[in-house]
Length: 110
Length: 118
Image (cartoon, rainbow over all chains, first blue to last red):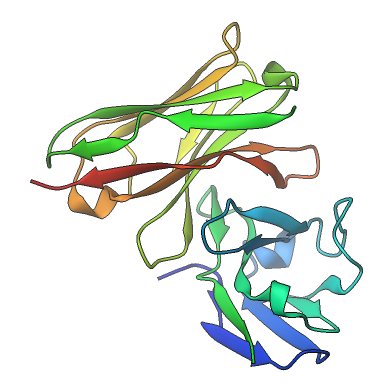
């Protein structure tokens, strides 16, 4: 059972906009920054969004992040088949004193 | 080229030990905290451990505390994970990762597979 809760699956058609949510608590998302990682099958995880809403160099602006209270969201616009992957939110937990990941959301492009 | 390369994975019997290594290159290894993250087959990413730049501070997930030891050799640009008292629940792909000044894991290795089975 992950400390951060993500919907296990999401889907959309090419060109659509999808939102992946991540729910936590005051001790993690509520008081810390949030990062998002993309993990394509057979590859190494990749940093997608850091500090809630910042994109590393090379990440398209189709990807955006936000946070409100104890929840965070990753939005993917203009969905493409290459976006099929597992997406994980992550942050530090002040109470547990550990880094935590969400359980992951598997995105399917129909 | 900036990269991390893990090694040391393999098949080990329950109760056994294994030592993972992560060789860093292309960046100033001693300037970064380093982490281990694992992914069991069919499961999600799980944080395992972290070590400070000079190796003096370490933290562990409850699931591995007391059994795993993270360490580093800055002279050899290498991160380690000593894993003892292994059980089937430790079967996973193990990734080393660098954390940057924005508290994000911005560089990951390709992973090394650990299988605990008799």
